[in-house]
Length: 618
Image 1 (spheres, rainbow, N blue to C red):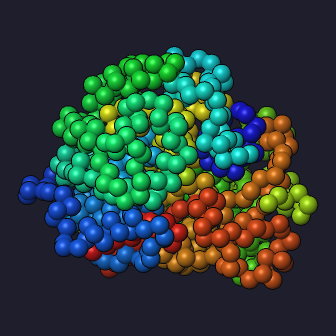
Image 2 (spheres, rainbow, N blue to C red):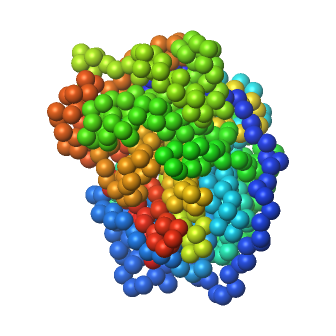
Image 3 (cartoon, rainbow, N blue to C red):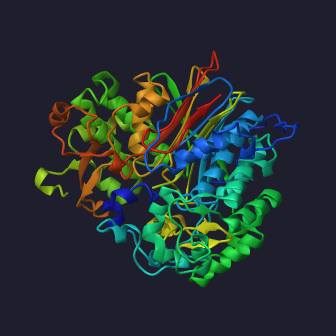
């Protein structure tokens, strides 16, 4: 792995653990009663929304500012997301017309990608899902992550790199190459989740996305911000450039009427023919041809062989709750559970909230650094923590966390902090839904590359990113044709055997925010919205170091300007930078959640205050 990636804060959650493992697809969830489809006519078109609803949610998309994100309260159903208010409203409509939480989550996710024009989420991206099925009481985990390319036998030689020295570095360096493409499982995941847990007709899930692509919406401020640094890359291929230019050949500007006719045609075909259209049909043929034209090694067999994995969710106990996290080979659930165990070993709940206790802030910052263990080769981890089993299976045990915390207290930490003279001046999306029957679905999906990718390949309106650029070593470890682990953290909390919260997270600081939000809920008794509004610390900034050489970087803690008392920050003894609301989006994680009272059925949904997602319920 290029050490530049390890030192880069923004790629810590884009790269994946050097685990080299591949889970079996043989296991199926236990038998359950078949889902009864909705018999009445269903129409998820936004034309059915009450008067003024379309304009209301479109205004949120168009605003350059963050909207007010109040909690969504109701009893019948709820949906929340990190971005794209129009998409959450589409998901709410699915619930209102008799859909399940999976119907709502898939409708929302499909719509999010259309609104975002495939920039940071893609129909050929990846998806992680954790679902509670009220009929059986079962919690399942679905992995629709990346597959490596079978003919890619030398991934360390894949061209391109991502850095953080300059803005140009952040958007990728080196010649564009089709070898950077991987096989994404998003659309297979949509189909598989719906087949198992959906009620609404499959084609209806696509209706809001098709309308947005076909009828169009104004070109948003967010799209303009994504487009500006990518103009040259998007001009490389005529088909890609055509998506973002007006009939006069000029790139779209904010407020221009933006349609995606090629995407609308593709979505209609998928809605009618199923995901095979993308994996064995016409789109697959065009996609493989486009990737190979840029030197890629992907074949039609790579797409045809793709299947989702239904895997056992990870499970742990914490403060009277049972935590169900996304299972292996993803390592995000391991990071999540380990952090909660470390928080217990450190006594965070007893010391008080990090906004009120300097000791809690210092120790919570320390323990969330341990997500870096997922990036270390076993020999490097052994060098830092000799004799301690740091396999994924061991890291989710409380006993391992106790021993690890003892060593951290003795000074053996991955998070060594910078001194004052060393300090120099994303993406994905989430959906959580709960329906009238108490089913819960939590989803994170991503293109896993920097806005459209350096290659900027778009085929029939569907973007194909360059996620291999930041994951060369783990691709080598996983081997050709296998599933890659990923850092997503999604799950469900249960108490006394009843599910009470579903949650998902995204962005570069997802681990820090997930730990804080879950601790806020389980240890400090907050609702999801209260957990999001509480003061929080963000992804730290690295200074120097080389983890792969066994030399950890030094770190600078970052918090929101004005959220913490200055005396408390000074008392931590840590190097701390305070960031503005404008800069927060580059450092924060975005966590969302919906709670459900098992006795009354009352729902409370929360969305992040610094995003354009909305929490909706009825």
